[in-house]
Image 1 (cartoon, rainbow, N blue to C red):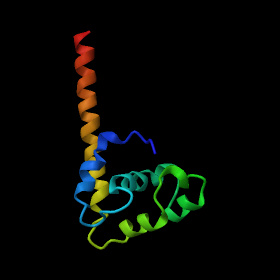
Image 2 (cartoon, one colour):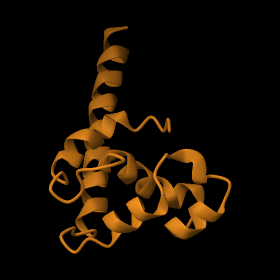
Image 3 (tube, rainbow, N blue to C red):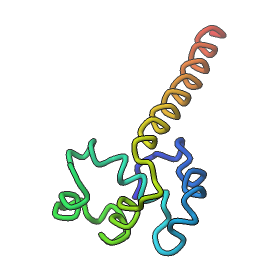
Image 4 (tube, rainbow, N blue to C red):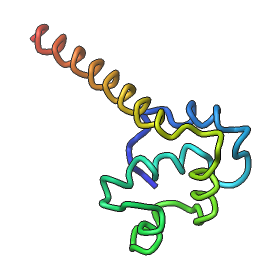
Amino acid sequence: MVLHLEYFHFNKLSKSFDAIKSKGVPVGKLLQVFICLPFMHKASIYTLLCSGLANLSEAQKDAYYELKNHMGINWRVCPIKFVTRFNKIIEKRLIKAIKEVSNV
């Protein structure tokens, strides 16, 4: 799956999930799908798997549901961290663009 989300460093984030899920599809790849669900107009993993977009990842439904239903994950914090990271990325790119325009 190529979603160009490498700026969000999902691999770094997934290291904190290693104790929860250590086999199969990396947590970072599952998180990418979770983050993109609303943008694909999918309300759930079920609707994703029933659609033609199920081939976005090699993961099967059990991998998604195992991660989603794990009691040790505070899912309310994940969107906040995602937005915080997004804001930092935008800020860095904006500062870089302003410097480039100033130097012209």
